[in-house]
Amino acid sequence: MEPETQPTTPVRPNGGRSFGFALIVVTSAAIGFALLIRQGSPPKNFGIRPAPPIRAAGWLNGKPPTAADLRGKVVVIDAWAHWCERCRAKAPELVKLHETYQNRGVVFLGLTPEGNDVATENKKFLEEVKFTWPSGYGAAQTLAALNSEALPKLWVLDRKNMVIWEQPASEPIEAAIERALAEQP
Image (tube, rainbow, N blue to C red):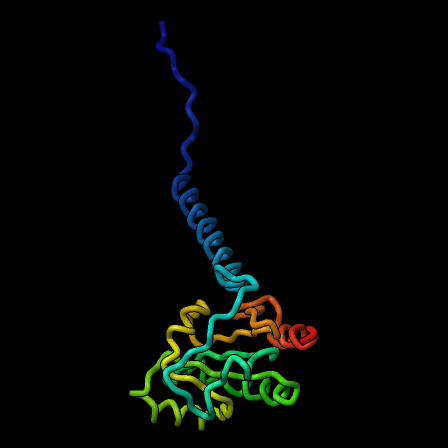
């Protein structure tokens, strides 16, 4: 009697390696896709929400804004730091935005978490990038309340003091400003 033989599946050379390679490619693509989606998505905890009180240890380029100064105004807040190269690179766009909207009642405010110990560097930065609007230093508490996770970062507040837009966003900042300006005061 002959022993029973089991049918065998032919073994392909490198068959296991091909599967492993395919698995790595698919996993890498999934991670890359997730990161791409996250970059284009609003930040976590984003939604129209009340803006925190704007507080800073001191102000450069003007007097500190009061709640009365900002009431009923559209406000653009820019978070920056004197050492931030991306802040410096984005500055011309922000200056142009300011030129476009300042005469339409939009208030621009700069905020930096840095303190008075770097006042000279902060003043030099503002001069070099041509920011003429009031900029508060020592504003870490306000920036934390705005959920600032990176620099530079922008927010738009509507006439009711609600945060209606922040970076990153699916619409350009100009669209958010126009939307806010269209609201009745």
